[in-house]
Length: 194
Image (cartoon, rainbow, N blue to C red; front, side, top):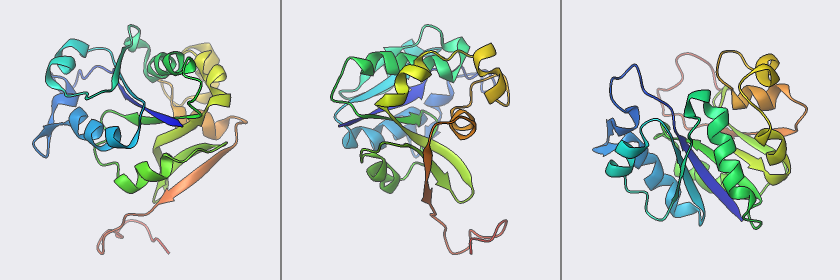
C-alpha cells in the first residue's frame, strides 16, 4: 500500500495572506490539491506549519491526518521529516508519494500512476522539467529522516532551502523519471517535443 503526503507548511510572506487560501476555480489552492489526491489514497497526511490554524479553519481535510510541523521555518526538509516520522509506524506503507500544497494542476492520470508501488524513487517529468509528485520507497526513509537544512545538505542544494529533486538527482540513489506530456495543440512554442 502507498500513502500520500501534501506538504503545506511554508509561510507566504510575499502575498501578505496564506497563499494556500488563494482562490483557484472557486476553491482555496490547498483544497484543490486535497480534493484531487484524497480519493486515491487510504492514507493521506497534510503537513501544516506557519498558518496551520487559519488553514484548519478554512479547509476540508476529509479523513486526512493533519500533521503540524513545529519547525516549518527550517524548510521543506522538516516537513518531509514530519511525514516520514508519522508513516514509519504504519508498516503496510511501501511508498510515500509527496505532493506540494501549491500544486493544483496535478493531473489525475499522474496520481493514478504514482499509486503503483515501486522499488525505485519516481520523479515526475513534465516536458523537460523534473517536478512533483515524487514517490519515495520505504528503504530510503531513514536516510531522509537524518537530513537537515544545514551543512549535511550544503553540497546537494542550489539555494538556502533543501531541494528534494536535486537531492535525488545528485545522490547515489537510483531514481526513474516518469514522463508526462500533456501538451495541447498550441503548447509547443518554446521547445520542440519531437
